[in-house]
Amino acid sequence: MKKFNGFTKGINLGGWLSQCNHSKETYDTFINKDDIKRIATWGLDHVRLPIDYELVETEDGKYIEEGFKYIDNCIEWCLENDLNMILDLHKTAGYSFDEFETSTGFFESEKLQERFVSLWEELSKRYGKYENLLTFELLNEIVDPNFTVIWNGIAKRTIKAIRQYAPTIKIIIGGVSNNSVSSVKLLDLPYDENMVYTFHFYEPLIFTHQSAYWVKKMDTSFRTNYPNEFASYVSDSEQYLPIENSEIFTNIRETIIDKTFFENAFLEAIQIAKERNVALYCGEYGVIDQADLASTLSWYSDINEVFEKYEIGRAAWTYKGKDFGITDEHYAPILDDLIKLL
Image (tube, rainbow, N blue to C red; front, side, top):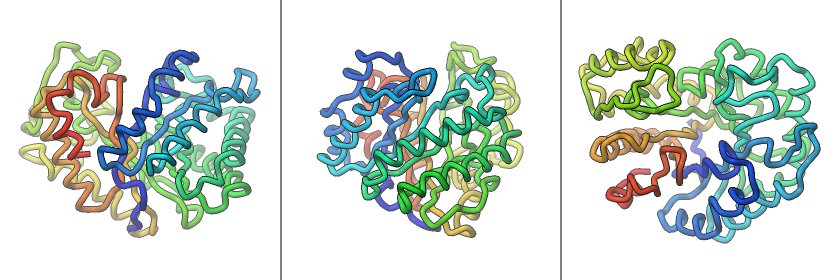
């Protein structure tokens, strides 16, 4: 399996230019140069920068020059601090992973798909020259597994368009079911030698998203620990999560869910990456700020050990805010220890 050089340990900048109040105040204040400098002192080698299309496009598809300047700033700050950067399109016109049930037609609309391709052409023209620093990530978390074939087709068209302006820049692509690790095998064969397969991992979801107010069926007073008995996680998942979020337990049977769980969950994707000679990357993983601190450290320690064993690059979710921000008050007592486990 290829190694994703320069993108071994990173952190997301969620909530700044994506999943945010799209306002100048947020853009100017949520993340600044000092934050990037601070991240560099932690010994990380990259940041993942999620952006929504609203940052750089009007509703009718015209480009917003002021929006591109925030991407420019982040690139400049990363250059100054010897950090690499992933430019992740977190939301495109007609589709958002966190509003997928009400998203309007991206996978059915040729017009919206062409707009997506055109946006990536524009990003490639502007930022392809930074290939020694920058990696492109096509789109965050395709939710519906029924879009596998359509998504592979859209991705191929988009990669082909990018290659006109950035012929050798690394491009990250993830699969359906919210970039699940089990969907890696459903991705098309790599377009060329500069592709990276990505997945996200928040399992056991019943632990990492305990009490999450946005999860259907979840009781916001529910709490659990890690590690824990397999049967307990299964029972709680059935009670507090939608049925599709319990499926990971059907193929993994353990007495206790601990670090062997991560290894077993990753093995198929690792094998696929080896067979296809492509790098494997975990673009998001983390624990909600409702979990107890000892459990949080145990979870990070176990997943980190497996990442290290198989040389899987990763970026924790997230630097600040969004109920997962490791620099927020909840994590203060363990921050120094947590940074060592990223």
